[in-house]
Structures are given as structure tokens and as C-alpha cells.
Amino acid sequence: MSFETLDLTKFSDPVTSDPSILDPEFPPEQFVTHFISQGSVVHATVWIARGSELKGTVILSPQWFGGDRLESVIIPLQVAGINVMTFHPRGMWDNQHIYTLATAADDLLAAAAYVRSTSTGDAKTGQGKLWRTDPQRIAVMGLSGGGANVSIFACATDPLIQSVIAVAANSMAVAQSPEKISGTPFHDRVKELTAGRVDVLKTLASMNPAELDRVRPIVQAPRLVDKNVLLIGALNDRVATIETCHKPIAQAFRDAGVRVFDDVILDTDHSFLTKRIALARLIIGWLRQRCDF
Image 1 (cartoon, one colour):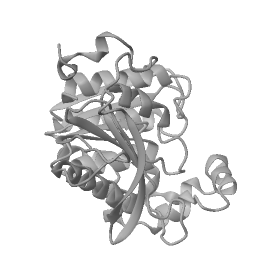
Image 2 (cartoon, rainbow, N blue to C red):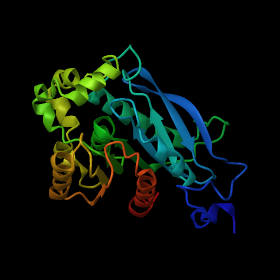
Image 3 (cartoon, rainbow, N blue to C red):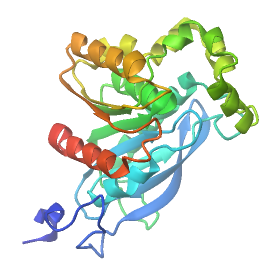
């Protein structure tokens, strides 16, 4: 039995175990790269799974606050034979741009286009090997507004992105009246801790109706009819609550007739720190069963 036809998942759990078999010619890799979005450089990090065969890629859209970004899912995905890329949206960490959910959406679309371009054979990994990218299997994923909402919009917009995993998506109902969050302890605390870098009220107030609609999952639902969608909520989420966010979004996707739609609620909070193994297994299993990854 050749390495290419060997089902490595029979020998190890990609979430809790290291690979049982390695390919010395095409080992797993991690390296930095960059792509261009709206004329500017966006820095990215890539994880390439072992093996010479073409692989699906998951692109992580960073959380608005620049925090979690679901990093703990990256290595399990790579061990499971899936490539991963994440990036630093313009304006999130630099002072040359202004970060908004709209600009982050543009960056995610540019990231997907860049990943597809690597399938031509011109792009090389950190070790000078081919990326082994399957341009037909690209999924976008993220947490909260900057991750989940931006990923939903990207999947709805780009016909070549067939799958989205939205973790703790926000209905953005508050965006209709951003003044309601002024003075709330959570957002004021975030603004204080980030030295003003993350100002939710200011950001929402600066977005016009068309920009807000881009990141409202309920508005984007009809454009996801032919896509694969996994919506993951947290039972104890106080930011994107089940009642105000998860349930309305899930109902909108069902009403729109999304082709492949699954929603799961895990017993955790907005950070998902207490359900990391369950989350990773859920995501990998869904990508394999629903998206042929």
C-alpha cells in the first residue's frame, strides 16, 4: 500500500495525537508569506499538511479584537491532512490602515484568491516545495464578528469558496443602534485594554448601511443557498448570545434554504476555551463528511 493511498486517520486521532506516519519528502510545514489586498501587503502564516496529494485549505479570519483566532484548531487540522492559513488584517495591528469589518472582508477575499493562485505550481513553501493546494476545496472560518461574520460574507460573495464555519457569529442587531453599547462594561473594558485600538462604538458608527449589510449574516443568508455552512454557538455566550444571535441566524439560513446547513451549540462561553477538543473534532469531522476535505 503506497503512502498516498494510506488512510492515516486509522492510526491516530488528529486532535490529540501526533502523526503516526510521516512523509520525508513532503513533511508538514509552517512558514510566513504575504498577499496583496486593495494594493497593500497583508502578512500571513501558512501550515501545509504532510503528503504529496492535493489538499483542502481552511483560511482563518481573525477575531475583531485580534485575540484567539481559533489557533488551537490549526495543528489538528494540519495533522488531519488539511492546509491552514491565517493573516493579519489591514489596520488590526498596524497604524497605516484603519481596521473595519468591511476591510477585513476584503482581506479575506484576497486571501482566498491568493490560496487558489498557489495551485498553479509557481508558489513554493518555506522548504521550496509545492503548496499542494486544491483550489476547489477552500473553506473560511472564524470566531465572533471579525471572524465568523466576515467569513460568512466571503463565502456568500466568492463563488469559489464553497464552505464556511462560523463560530459564535453575531447578528449585528446592535449595529442598527450602536449608541446602545456606549458605556457598557464589556466594550469599554476592551477599549481600555487595547489602548483605544478596538473601539466598537466608533467602528460601527463609521460604517454605512451597505457596509453593515456585508457583515450581517441574516442579510447574507440568501446568497449561501448553494454553500456548505456550519454554525457553532456557545450555550453560555454573553457576547453573541444564543437567543439574540445563534437562533435568529440559524433560522435565517433555514428559511433561505441553504443546501448544506448544520448548527451545533456547545456548552461553553464565547472563548470556547473549555471545549477545544470537542470543537476541533467537530470541525474536522464536518469538513470531511460535508465538504470532502
